[in-house]
Figure (cartoon, rainbow, N blue to C red):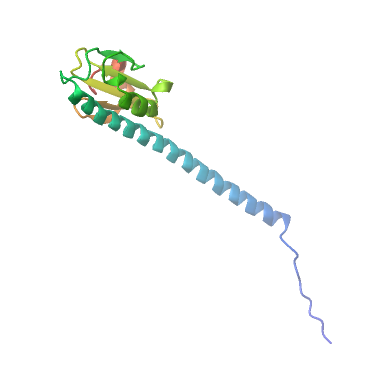
Amino acid sequence: MEYMHTNKRAGFTLIELLVVIAIIGILSAVVLASLNTARMKGSDAAIQSDLSTIRSQAELYRDSQTNLAYGTNGVLESSCTASDNMFTDTNIRSAALTSAGIDNGNVTCNVAAGGGAYAVFAQLVTDTTKYWCIDSASVGRVETATAIGSGLSTLTACP
């Protein structure tokens, strides 16, 4: 009678397990890096959406005023708190400005004296040297800090 030798392995070797774990680790790192980039781009998209909401609400605010202005008191500051202008409207302030980052100082709101024009600048997450800008002329675009210059707190239109 002839015996057949079977070479049965009871499991994986330590080297095989380490190689598999290393490959899984590398793949996980790549996925996590991609997710972080996507999260930052999503934050920028949310800021742009919030400022678009401000633009729509600003027009509704203007239409409800007897003088068809964005307010009687100008505001040129980052806190967006001057009285009697569109930024005191609860629809604009509590919803869109808070979401866009006014609480952490990333938003600047400017209304011209007499309320004839406005501009809002919000710092982007993916590149902190860039701002999303909207204004009363229906402009919505990315502006660099160098294009804005020192006028961030005085501009009532996107440059």
